[in-house]
Amino acid sequence: MQIALTPDLKKVYPETLFGSLIVRNIPNKKINDALEDRKRNLERQIKEIQGEVNSNSMIQKYNSYFKRWNKTYPIEYQINTIRKGGTFPQVTVLVDSMFIAELNNRILTSGHDLDEIQGDLTFDISRGGERYLKLNGQEQKLKKNDVVLRDNEGLLACILYGPARRTSITLKTKNALYFAWCPYETDDRLIAAHLNEIRENLETVFGSVSSKSELNR
Image 1 (cartoon, rainbow, N blue to C red):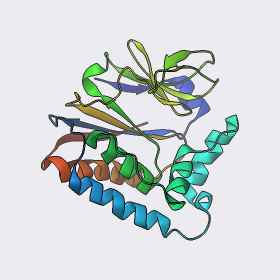
Image 2: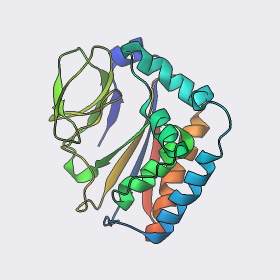
Image 3: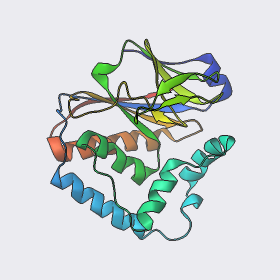
Image 4: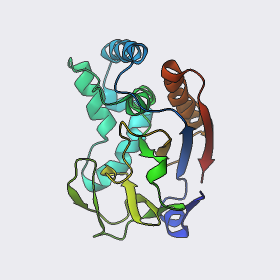
């Protein structure tokens, strides 16, 4: 499976960077006690945050993207929800391992069932008007110049509205692909560390994990 960025994407977002992590042979589970402990620890850390969350440099960078469409970075919303007494959602360990790292590092991340992806992957920009089914099953019409991901069958995700339902991680997933989405200049080391944290969360559940990570630009 090849991962490519189109010239159109590089023209509109010349500093864009994606990090990918593939993990194999780890049958998904509903819940794991050790992972739940990591959630509780991160919740405590988030509730101890001083000052405004939106002053965080990573969140500011993402908000500069979302504000083009009068939207707010969803990770900022999730962090503020936890600060006000909310808790992490409990989905499955393959999803939760990603979400813990996402909120800890403030880096937008998508998770996909690797076996449901058809052919090679391409990051591109939307032309406006394309449609796909989101995770909740609702059809979404895309805005122009959003960053999108496609395989040979169509759209898999975009920054503004998230992953498609077609390749979503389920309890049947055994092989997963995670992407860190950064449409602005980012230190390679931050992305590598973020992907490594997802892998470490998975190792908390499964022990040794067969994985491969790389940066795509």
